[in-house]
Image (cartoon, rainbow, N blue to C red):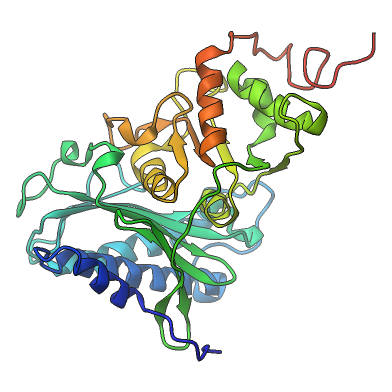
Amino acid sequence: MTLVRYRATLTQYLIEQRRLHPEATGAFNDLILAVAQACKAIAKSVAYGSLAGVGGGLAAVCPPQEDVRPLVEVAQEAFVRATEWEGVLAGLASAETEAPICIAEEYPRGSYLLVFDPLDGFGKMALNVSMGSFFSVLRAPTRGTDPHEADFLQPGAEQVAAGYAIYGPSTMLVLTVGNGVVGFTLDPEIGEFLLTHPEIRIPETTCEFAINSSNSRFWQAPVKRYVEECLAGATGPRGKDFNMRWVASLVAEVHSVLMRGGVFLFPRDTKEATKPGRLHLLFECDPIGMLVEQAGGRASTGETPVLDVVPTALGQRTGFVFGSKAEVELIEEYHRTTVAQDTDAETPLFNTRGLFRTPD
């Protein structure tokens, strides 16, 4: 049911933002609206799931990724088709392809680059967990030509805009164009994104954190220290009780942090010691980082601001910590000061050297 109360549309919001920049041509607005159109199409496919002939049916606890690949392909195609024809983009890069996506020859090349993850959380489709799409906009170094991979390898601080769509009980588009963070909710009756969250801010402090505790035996010493102190509660060094959660859907975790605060940790660990982390720097961490920083939070690799990291490859991965500023800064401090500890399988978090020690 459409509410009577007036709410600005995404188009109106973008026009208001454009008025702050008289030199703007309107191409940027066209791009964001095209991305929004892609997200509407994806939301419909996600809502129908197997009824629309995409994705898989019921799956096992660890479903084969092939069961849901068709839905990812639908999402990928939605982004490309919605954005390539306008003449706004020079090229695209997707988390689902190893190389940049070239725009069809019949379309002109523009001055922006679009970086996107078409469908985060698709592996949990059978569980009906919220899925989403991440995106960010960069300026193309050379306008009017097909970009090279190196053109996309810009630090997150160079992003012009970033956002995500979350496909849950309602479809929301959360966006920053460098002037704070706003949230829009899709009104299915009129097919418009309406402004419902005009000023999203992350509380500086929190009593909630999210981490996959099944990896605790692989955590580095600073992360172990932080989690142990949170779990110690009001009688521990933090002097307050914390809640711990883990949704296993990155877009859902980001949305939770933006809506009510908290800190999310997907740190580098020793499970795959040669890898610097497991989340995509360009496709996930950079757009999330811009949103979080614009909302008053902090986004980090655990050691350094994530937006300062200069990518060296499209598929580059990194450790990632983001959320309430004070908590992320504390985790960074622990990385600077905590003495390395033995992290092999003989010293897990919850044995005699962990938080819950057996009496003497």
